[in-house]
Each structure stands twice: as structure tokens, then as C-alpha cells.
Length: 468
Ligand code: ADP
Ligand code: GLC
Image 1: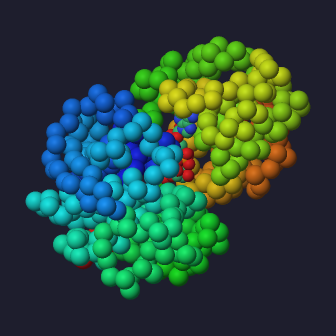
Image 2: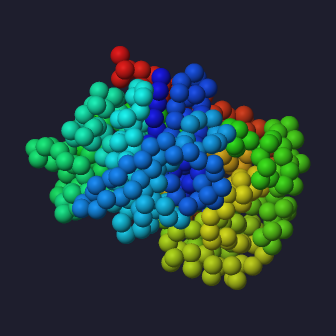
């Protein structure tokens, strides 16, 4: 089966969060199952792409809102396990960041239009077009409703919702970004008075999935305004839990670690990684180490972290390390704590791939007090590395972490509140005193299989239902 993934991110080409990890792994595992999956994404000025060898395979002059943009699709040489294409649109995509520009709506509509211009001229049309998040949300609409892309009409489309908080909505005044369509179809694009690409994709895609079953259930009740739509489209929706790339995320081979280890050698391996991490951050490796890795945003519960860290460090003899960036206010609060708790707390404000691996390998516990967590990959990585997750029961966290009180391997709490997090830290401290038991649970954690093999096949079955 020929599968074309369309996405704004793909690891290691350009990564902001877990979307990149999924799009950088799922196609590889689908190919191993005997299919031909490829990825098309925008060209950004990322280190990976600036070093890459590329070959132009398609050129197009895109007419959009009265301006002509020169665009080209390039095949990128790589050893990622799938064919990779990037779309460079003059003045629009070739910038340093993936998101965060005032004209993001225009940039991503342009990307989607050029992707379809290229796809419709391919010698062999894809059997499935798999869209990821709102940046690719107009694709199912354009394929089924615009004369320009009539030839793609019969190709089934799948939308994966990685995060329904972000919908990419913009005003009707900017409708001229889209190619022409029948006026009567405007309702497919509109949601509560705005042009909403995520809503349009939920309406027009042949199938819709979220990245965990619990998140799909939760969206029926709370989906940042889309709950009614998701209830109405329920029959074509399903939750498929993400996998992880067990080759990139393998403590036995991970180049980012100070010392590699397996389940058998985990004691020595994790000790060396913890010591290196603590030396780097001026912490004490003899104390229980709690980590946080992630975007410092409301969904991740980042706003409660400064107060929770403050209270935990007042009460318990532990160390805390934080890696993340996001809300400037939260960043400043987290930086301010560094002086107060020098020697037992440190934070790196920024994005640093190496350090994230080192935290999973060196910390004893990982905090994830998320308000919204469609799947969450950090908890899956930390399990594989033998670090115990402390999670709020929501979305994918609920589906993947079982509390130690229920014979599980993590610590779960119900609310994103300071008191819930501090109480969980207290439970962790008590649990950690029984090192023998902790080490036995660590083995269980590391043995859990969350590799993509199964989930990649679940997606294939979904596509097959659409192709019969
Ligand atoms: P989300 O996609 O919502 O941010 P996920 O848990 O799915 O959350 O994925 C987050 C990914 O981004 C993981 O690979 C994690 O290691 C990585 N990550 C998040 N913040 C940072 C950071 N500051 N530095 C390095 N890696 C980070
Ligand atoms: C989103 C979600 C996260 C999920 C990731 C990959 O960024 O916030 O929970 O793990 O996508 O699907």
C-alpha cells in the first residue's frame, strides 16, 4: 500500500514535540510491514535540512490571494527508513522556526496546496493520504471538494488528531487563501464563525483518530469547542495509542547517554547517567532525582510547577531537574527558584535533545502533571529507560501508566494541582526507600513493549477498511 503522510513536523528533520517523533517513526514501521510509506513536510532552515542532499522533483507557481509563490518539492536523501519530501515555498516555509509566525495560516495553507499539486501529478497516486493535526486539515476538504484536486477525490484520507487544543482557526476574510470551491460547501470549513482547519478535517476525512483511546473519549466532552462535532462524527472516530521508536529510544545503544545499559545492567548504567546529570547541573546524585521534560504550557500543567517544586523542596530531601521552554512567566519563575534551591534544583530553559535522553536515563522519577495529554511520549520513553513516571490520570497517561498501589509501575494522581503533585512526590519518596522493590519494578517498566510494530499495523488495518 502507498501511504503518504503529510505533516508539519518529522524527527529528526524538524521537531517541536511528539508529533515529530510519531511522523519520524510510524512510516518506518509501516515500511517494515511491507508497505511504501513516505512523508511530505515543509522545508525549514533546520540543521538537518541545511546539511541534507536534496533533489528537486517538482516545481509549481502557486497563485494564492493575489500573489505568486515559487515552490519546489525536493526529495531528501536519508537513512530514516522512508522516502522524505520537503516543500520549499519562497518567502513562506524557508524560515528557522516551524511555528510561531504571524502568517502561519498562510504558510500552512500554501504548504497543503503545493503538496496536493505535487500529489496529483505523481505517476502513481497514493492509496492513502494520512494527515496530521490542523496544519494539514484542509487536505481532506480540498481533495473532496475542489475542482483543482478532483483527481484525488477517491483517495481515502485519515486525520490523526495529536492535539485538539490547537485548531489553526482564522477569519472568513482570509478565505481567499484556499483554492476555489462551491459556495454551498462553506459549512464544511466553518466552525462557530471561523474557518477552522481541524474542524474541516474532522468533517471531511474518511476516518479520524486520536493518539490514545482515552483522549478520544475525553474529546467527546471537552475538545476546546469541537466536542459537539466529535460527538456528531463519532462513528468514524477511533483511538489508536502511539508507539515509540525503540531504535532511537534504546538505552542499550543511545549515543546521547554517558553509559549505555540494558535491563540486566541497569543499576550501573543508570547510576553513571544520574551522576553525570547531577554533576552537569550541580545536584547531589545520592538523593532521589525528579525530572520534568516538556513544553512549559498550560496543557502540561507547567504553571503549577514552580509552586509544586518550591513546596516539595521545602518538605523533602530530594533533587529536581527541569528541561523545557514556553511561557515566559513560568520560565522566569523557574529560573528564580534556581538561586533559592541551588544544589537541589536546576533548570535548563530551552530545547536540547541530548539532555532529554539523559534525564530519562538519569532521573528516578519523571513528573507529568498534564491537564491535557493526547498520548504523551515522555512517559513511554522514561519507562523504557527505567525512570518511574508520575502522571495525572488523563488521555494517554491514563492508558499507559498503572499506579504502584494497583501493582503497577508508576504514580498517578487525579488533578493538576500543587497538592496532588506534592503528595505524589511524597509517595515517591516513601516508595524509593524500599530500593529492592523499586529495582524490581524498574525491570517491569523496562520490559513493557510500546514499540510501533503493533500500532503501525493497526493503522494499516484502518487504511485497508477504507480501500476495500
Ligand atoms: P508534546 O508533543 O505535547 O510536547 P510528547 O510527550 O508527545 O508531548 O512529546 C514531547 C517530545 O518532545 C518528547 O520527545 C520529549 O523528549 C521532547 N521534548 C519536549 N521538550 C523538550 C526539551 N525542552 N528538550 C528536549 N526535548 C524535549
Ligand atoms: C501531541 C500531544 C502529545 C502526543 C503527541 C504525539 O503533541 O500533545 O500528547 O504524544 O502529539 O502524538
